[in-house]
Length: 364
Ligand SMILES: NC(=O)c1ccc[n+]([C@@H]2O[C@H](COP(=O)([O-])OP(=O)(O)OC[C@H]3O[C@@H](n4cnc5c(N)ncnc54)[C@H](O)[C@@H]3O)[C@@H](O)[C@H]2O)c1
Image 1 (spheres, rainbow, N blue to C red):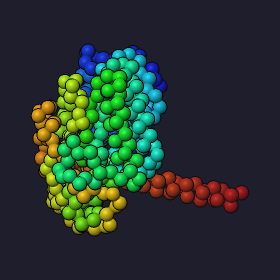
Image 2 (cartoon, rainbow, N blue to C red):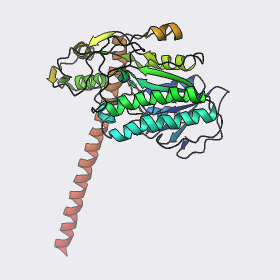
Image 3 (cartoon, rainbow, N blue to C red):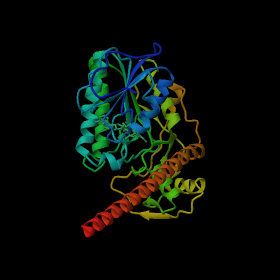
Image 4 (cartoon, rainbow, N blue to C red):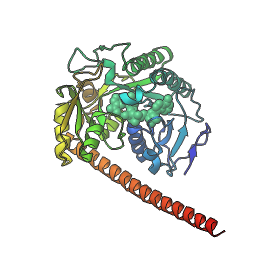
């Protein structure tokens, strides 16, 4: 296993000559699946991550692979990586409101300063660079469904602005580096994506619902549950990101990547309950500020220019995600049981030793 925590990446280790690809945010949910895919495709992958929301667990199977390296680094700091770089995917940014609102200033800096650092690297190395932008750039849309030409409806001072406006500014920087310095850019506007390796506690719809259903506790629905979302399975998204990255250089995006099938939040909750054989009920709570009411991508651009459209049905995607969380919860429960047995045993041994010591004192 080779984990590099410094900047020495001059010596590439490769099984064959594929792309040398940097994945910033590669230890996160989407990033780790992308790393898996690129390594399988025989790219040499350098995963750059500060582990803010990502985890080594996501990339553990890759750590022994000769075509994979991990660089512990915060993209708010300039990136210095030796040797040629063909491709850079910039996914580094917390994606769930719970995490990006935890330190909103850091989120904005990650979006903006991080984009500058990634673009400077791309400029220096003449690499192609893809920005993981988001449907949040459309804000609470007045136009439905959302086409790439829609310029959005974002509250610049609300609690979600650090992310929404940060991502909008990052898009601006990408297009300005393209126009000013000729950097080859690709901007993907990613809509809600779900699948294995989402964080259990990140407050996102699918992971929240599944964990609550598996635990048999009430499923929290914010608002009436009639607000809509569309959910894209991770495998479809990774394929879309790669197709966009490898598309002809005149295709810059922005390009929507998401599943246009629209469900109300309540429909998703009921599907999760059914597919996880849960007895959970629905628990309605107040809607958070600036929560978008409708969200659905128009994907005509991705379909015509990339030949991409999602293939995985919501039922299949939910099955895979439920299986992942069921295993992860079972493992945690087993670990918790072992830990509580160990701590009970340690407490018993401590009390035994205390009693023995007290007995010795009495005898003296
Ligand atoms: N998951 C979605 O539904 C979705 C939707 C739209 C856009 N996106 C975008 O896709 C990207 C990946 O999202 P995700 O769902 O995998 O989120 P995630 O939180 O699982 O992954 C983000 C990764 O970036 C890392 N990171 C955060 N700040 C960093 C910094 N300053 N320096 C280095 N690394 C940093 C985190 O540790 C994590 O590994 C994000 O940019 C997000 O905005 C995701």
